[in-house]
Image (cartoon, rainbow, N blue to C red; front, side, top):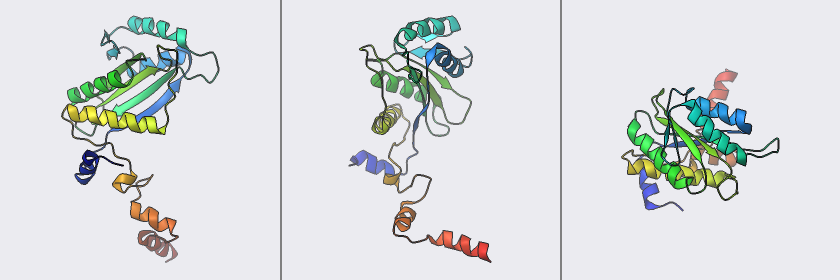
Amino acid sequence: PMSLQQMLSIANKLPQVVLKVSSYAKGVSRVGATLKYIGRDSELPLENEEGDILTQWEEVEDTLSQWQHDFGERSNSRDSMHLILSTPTNSDRIATQRAVRDFCAETFSDNHSYLFAMHDDTNNPHGHVVVKMRGFDGTKLDPRKNDLKRWREQFAEKCVTHGIDVDASPRLARGVGSKGDRLSVIKMAARGVEPLAKLDLINKVRD
């Protein structure tokens, strides 16, 4: 069930926020490579869960050396998770950074270390977050589809708090299918009815 706010957001056709898992990494070298990427080889500052700003690679290495004590020994162990959080085109970049910071603090800081950096090389302001999977209490993150949905909604809430009008409604709630198909087209296909546009295309090919 959707809240009244979600229904109003859909009715107003607010732009959507993006939150996705970009990758997982295992081991010091792979996790370190991810941190180098999000920090642009120390060109960009990284911020941790304590609010400390790391500007030198040596500082990042110190953090990485602390993290590795909790890295797994199995070949398929997930030691870190790389998240990308993005706001719509031409959103306020400072507001986006604050939304990313607040989201990370609320979602992870109680039990997980993380580092994040903001990238300004596209029209969509976005943040890259690397989270250490094993928490302070010894448990590991195991994000599922519902977790990502909840995280996306939380990030949207932080964006709205900082003045970025966005939504985080699911595709089907907006009448959109998995690949941009309208819901009516999906229902037609389920009934075995070919959409008119598709039939027109078939007829053109035949002609």
